[in-house]
Length: 89
Image 1 (spheres, rainbow, N blue to C red):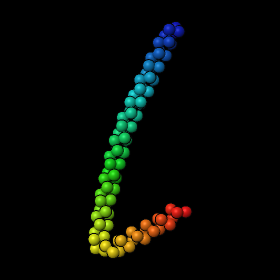
Image 2 (tube, one colour; image 1 turned 90 degrees about the vertical axis):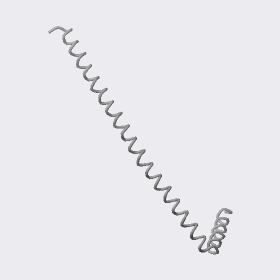
Image 3 (cartoon, one colour; image 1 turned 180 degrees about the horizontal axis):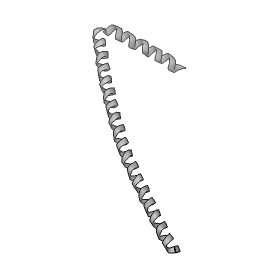
């Protein structure tokens, strides 16, 4: 066997290895794109849930203020006073 035969075999082997690595990189890219899409979809669902909950809570607070306006004013004054006391320090 000549050295040129082994050189050719070595180059073919390296070529196959390079192709396998390229295929693995492509597979990793596809997996990352899929993962990114899944994470984005989950994040959007969570954002929508949080927005819905915030709107619901704001509606409940608004209703509570309508039902008990004096209590709401008293709570607001109390919180304002406490905020003022803590920020003076």
